[in-house]
Image (cartoon, rainbow, N blue to C red):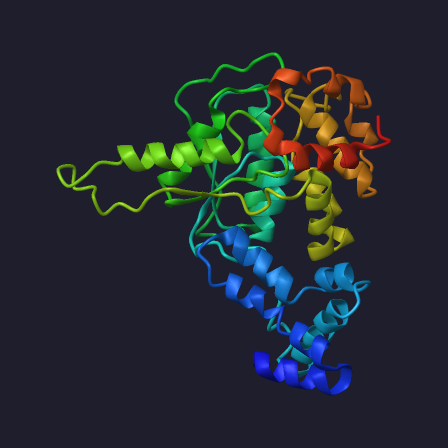
Length: 329
């Protein structure tokens, strides 16, 4: 339906002001023409999503206008016309960095099982991770698009906390060998090599070092890093997975992912991976207590926080994470 038609039909029932406000949702349509994948998704949600209707319902005038616009589109367009794909705004052939954890498994499935690379860097949990990667690939990946399991050629240093410096940089480089569009399973979190500033610097570095005419590399596409779920907590991501695939998909989430930084056979319950998994699963009613050597506790996780790591730009993320973990552990 054209914007003018939205305005005319809404004015007939609700007056001039509400009719004019009924034009506002089409701002979302214009946003979907922008190059940014994030803005495309925001535009889709702004234009035609029940969450927007719910958020604006209590506002006089504009809430009614948005609801009318939504209702008119539902009546005049075929079902599914405005369905919001998880891959909205992403290029058609990306390559995803796969880790074997819940985040990468969920995002990989929500994006339709694209090309993916798992890079074995010799960390303590690598055997457990590879086993889950291969199981997930065998069950869900198309025969011609199995998850690639590559050996890094040498082990990387793993700190006592389970942190592996530069791992994400190597994952980006590995995925860039498959596609210039690299998808990372980053959620609402911050790490030295897992934040928007780092991704921008890596893109600039790779652009400056790819070569020129002398190397016959001038036409190589620039590497672009995409994090389409960077706004979601792990709890929200698991919730989205269950909404899309149904409660019956819980078994896959439990059996085909590994979170602990240790080598098993049980989750240690002490590391950050265990705590974050336990919180997200608990918030979504998923119990796997028997998989932990001990129940994760908040103190083990919070004791490593330090004021020197504080980033003012990450305050919204801090608030999301604190709200996610409230009352647990």
